[in-house]
Length: 288
Image 1 (tube, rainbow, N blue to C red):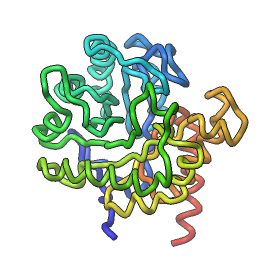
Image 2 (cartoon, one colour):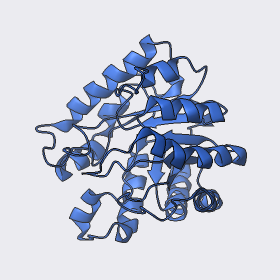
Image 3 (cartoon, helix red, strand yellow):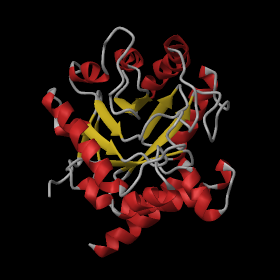
């Protein structure tokens, strides 16, 4: 089985993945499922990002378009207006900055500002308005990091008609195909991270199967990012309907994902997750 790289090469940083990393979520959106509308202006978003760093985040992930089930697409100009002022400030903080987008033009604009990572729920499949693709953008960049995520269908339909059958081999095959596409375009393996896409067109049972069988995705040979934070599947098993009431479940899922080999966890609740991972690391140190 290929061994995932212990490093994630990004624009400005070689991120050490020998210890798990916490990616803090900075949503610059009015309608995200958990914190939509909380940080819609650039100063508020920057203050939130600074707070996440103080709480223990290692990476900041900026998004200007909600991908919750049923979310409408955001025009290119509007997404650029939301994220560019924030990214411009965050790259000054001396930490890796990720841009969560599927639009090649937004990827390019943020990489030009110094962003380190492209985090795409569409796995670089969506073409831009001028025919530019996400693969084109990252392939001509010398070193940016890339996270490829699996999504079934698109946000408007993904939970109306979720995947059928055993999701794990289907997700693994999709991610392998698109990671190989990046390798064929000239990207080094250490620039690529995979995300199996919890909640993106999958049933509750399929989501938990992906967690239980993470080893099958890790067998592809790339580091894994897990994005369980406040997801509705956690609410289904705990009975917590409100996203903000799923903190404990989110932390548990993050620790379980790391225990099963994930190297990055993308979370809203940074302090709680960072503290839980410190406990896991202290225990793990005694097992060596």
